[in-house]
Length: 255
Ligand code: SF4
Image 1 (cartoon, rainbow, N blue to C red):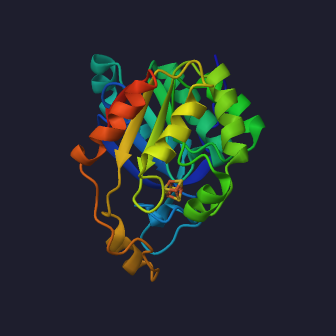
Image 2: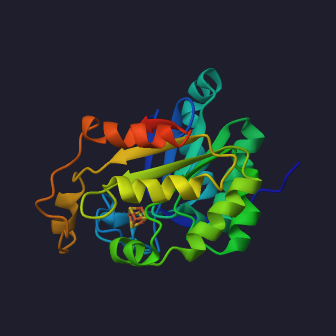
């Protein structure tokens, strides 16, 4: 029997039930607060700071989270679903995430993480083998472009991506497709060429740009840098889907 520290706490800014887009089956998403990136398109800007702020974020214990997520345990069992850690960057809370993984393992629920992998390599080695699914964001391959769009260079991310490929049980690459950033055949080609080095990746998700976080920037007294850029539709991404499939991957738009 594993020892679980039910008192361990971290800042959670949302728990979303009945998701079908963030891993298999019906899932509950735990949105952890705090992210080392500053993507210009981020639609959860309230998630970026590590501190509870305004109305966003509550310190929750592992027990508090367990009480919430077990409400849907019947749905997880019936659908093969479970829990997905998201953010912010959930892997920047390794101690807390590890305790919640233990709770899920004990309960027989699958676990997934949505990550951009900008965390120390030792965190990847510690947590990824314990998770059932990794949904890995790769946003751009040229490091200067990555820095321009997200505030950080991507060497650590790409290095961790190759490690995740080796040690994850299941890994899917996800690409937020953003006009003025990576919405071009050239950039998606670079990403596909990189993903080919990840020999366990079969599927790439293309996530069309949406501006639905825009109003939150006003609430936070921040400037939305992509003002005036139109959201992309699934149809807009069809040529890029062909390109991804041409590289031999399955391609899903959205999800
Ligand atoms: S990695 Fe995700 S949570 Fe972090 S700033 Fe970018 S879009 Fe927002």
